[in-house]
Image (cartoon, rainbow, N blue to C red; front, side, top):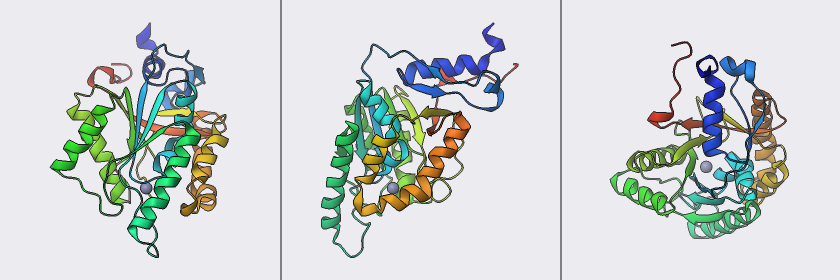
Length: 263
Ligand SMILES: [Zn+2]
């Protein structure tokens, strides 16, 4: 029986594990025949979710809707920022910029009911080495996450590349003990070659997400949103069959890998 419906079976399995209480849409293609929104009942377990981003704003713009959904469902959400966005305005000192953007991140986290944490790297000078692999692994492990979201490492911004790689290494070194999802930002300009495996309907959370995005006043949020993120949310929504969606790549554990259809 199950072998006849592999895509649906796989979808339900990972949704129940990682997105308890959320409404998600399955993939297109082979899953098209069963493609519809499925609401999974909330899990009894309170999930700990860590969302890693290079700069203040990356987690909010990339997956603020999904994070709002998690926190509203009673799960614990932490935003772990690799840097404080120190380099984003050459007219200001790094210290001034860090202070401003830290405040903006704290405001955004408050809106999404998430806790901000800063790893201590410097914007534009991100480092991927042995020491930072250890530090980030320790930071992520200390949070005891059930799920980690991070940036897709194929990206035009080196800080985003480093962020994705550091979280990926933390996942491997943690024995793949948590679920790992990659999110996209500014696809077409920053994120590259991103083919989603999972979608989350954020239509209902959209206003809250927007409020969190717009808290990043130094980042020209209205134009950034209208030019890049609004079209992306709507496009992912079209793919998922809803008004607005966020899309993810799920790195599955060896046990959870889907088989090839028909074999
Ligand atoms: Zn960024």
